[in-house]
Length: 150
Image (cartoon, rainbow, N blue to C red; front, side):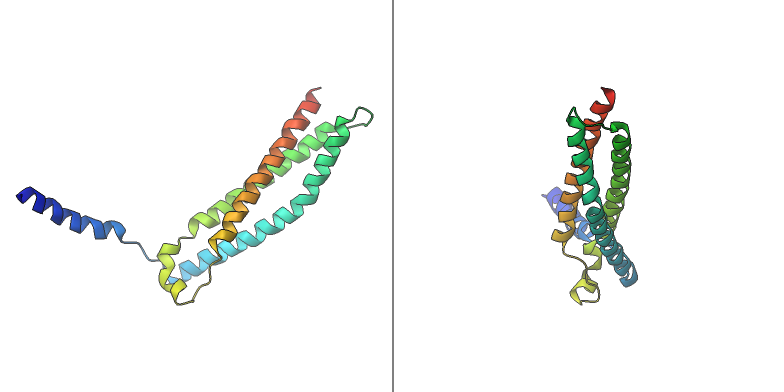
């Protein structure tokens, strides 16, 4: 019985310390929110800019698949690989901004409306868009690689 009481006392001390979160300063929270908003804005612009380039690459790939058309698959492959490098950089920057945003450490500033972070649904949607775009770029690279090998 004495051991149970000791364990209970230890548990009572351990639980609050485990739940204690570190609070960031207002400036740090504001900086994180600004970084996240900038990442969302930059990612949105990147995806808008990438759409026509992806479309052109897929149209060129369709033309390459036709026997009657001349195709510079190596040049298109190089462009697709450059798109992948750019995409990986953008994805990493976006991940970093999301990882640095720690809402639990900024609760007092959020509750008092001193900072206005974006809705998590918004930036989670960008993860999906970035993942899907990455798959399209990988498909281009795979198919152009096959054309270059022929």
